[in-house]
Amino acid sequence: MDKTNKISVRINGEDTYLDRKEESKAQNEVIMAQDEQASSIEDWMEEQEKQKQEASNDSDSDSSSDNISVLERTYPVKKKRFGLTKTVKRMMAAGASAVLIGIALGYVMIRLFAGMEAPEASSSTAYQDDIDNQTASSNEEGATEPSSTPETSSTDQGEEGEAVTTEQTSMTFPNVSAFVVQAGIFSTREQAEIMQNAISEKGVKSYIWPREDEFYLFAGVAPSKAEGEQIATLLKSQEIEVYVKEWSVTGADKTVSQPEGEWVQKGIEEWQSLLSPAASLINTGTGEIGDLTNPISSWTDSAPETDAEQTASIQQSYEQFLSSVKTYESNESTASLWAIHVSLFDVWYSYEQYIQ
Image 1 (cartoon, helix red, strand yellow):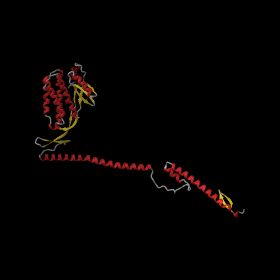
Image 2 (spheres, rainbow, N blue to C red):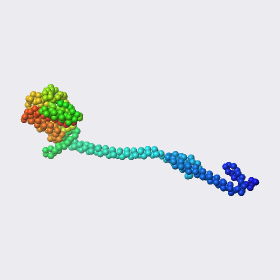
Image 3 (cartoon, rainbow, N blue to C red):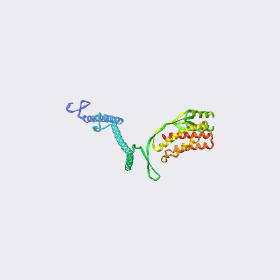
Image 4 (cartoon, rainbow, N blue to C red):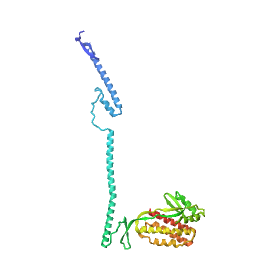
């Protein structure tokens, strides 16, 4: 058959000549082949879509989409715009939060310090005005200006209702040492009280002195070690285990009114003068009661009224000492002698608390 009466069809890269009668059949075969090819491409694209959906990382998914062929791509590839990573965004958010918190704290601190400085400035101004007024008054009366400025001052009412300024000054209070007869040292007050009660059953009163989380039990006090040993011998004869050692209250500087400071200093000097006659009464049973009462009576009468609150504890302990001496005068019992020593310890301890 002549090729002009045939139809040329290229299938799989080869030319095939068919009769025109077979034209419809060939066309059907071509259509079927194209359909199979399209179906294969669709199946392959669906498989690729499933794989893309199963991917967990968005960035990997975007990267794979750029590599899909033209036939597979179901939508145009969008060009990536400039963006920030999550880590950079988090760092920027944290930095912004830190800046805001720093600004807020700075504002609070400025307000706080401003509030603290304002009263000091006001107090300083009022104090300076008071000094200026006192200087002007002294100049008007022809008086000389004071050589030193007091640290602080307090105002009290005089007998006629006039304002009286009490100057505050720094005073040095001395060390006070003596020899004590110690009956024990305990970690708790309860344990010390148990021993105190046991000694009390033998007619001996004692004093518990707390210091640095420990509790010392003292039964007597003397100005010298020899006199302390005599008291210890007396107690040992009653089967009370004791020993003698030196005990001290460390002095310190304290800002007080001058009348108050001088009065306390005088009182502790008088206290030291009481130790020898009190020890003598215990050791020998002899001594003048006036040596115990006269110095303290005149001293308590001279207490400054304006400082009664500051010195209340010391005054009360001295009053208790005078009461113990009067009790001894009335019955002269051994128990009242030990009570005198207990009250001497109370005065000494009150002095320690005052200077601290």
